[in-house]
Image (tube, rainbow, N blue to C red; front, top):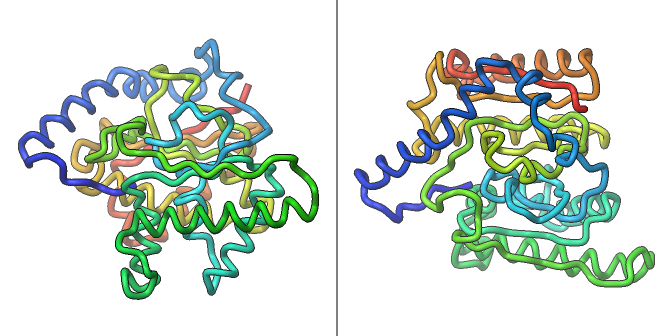
Length: 292
């Protein structure tokens, strides 16, 4: 989730414009038709849903839209999960992943969540790592080790947990910036394979609200939403390209109309109540659809 300055200013601007233009037709169609109609028209929509999750990856659109099977989306694979200490955070996230039957953990180049954690924990001196990416890798290694220890004890799985680092050239976005036009805000816990819809939907940050709200941690995915909005409206995202007519979209995915309306209202209140992101409210559209 982090901007990388691989290109000059003009070249970067042109590349952003190309990516915006590429994603514009499908996003306009979503805006004009509304999320319910737009998503209902997709022939393979049901295939994007699965109650089972095997891989955990960052909410970054560059990893969320990769072909890695059914995924649990979590910024930095949990490196920002609320806890007072590293070992406490590790324990809580390990248990979450075991309960979710995760078999693969991923980190990725340029992870903004790892960068936030790196700064939070004292940088190179405090973490013992030279870079934020190295800190993200360390987090995932320790998750893997801890999960393997626990899984041997409870004998839930016959094989160990995989730990994969995703390089920038493997991600489903350019390494220099984010191309997210939306946030996929999933209250069902089952919109885990957005990549099967390929170019039929706009790329977006993916947030699994249900996975955390069901564990009485509803505030955590809302904090991820705030981060996603900040990225979108920064130099790391499309920023000023978002206007009242062409807004950044937050798409709620719900079990029924009542849950959709409740989630949309909750998100509106979150935006209104946060000074850092409320200034973007005229350039944000909240919509949603009921899963098939």
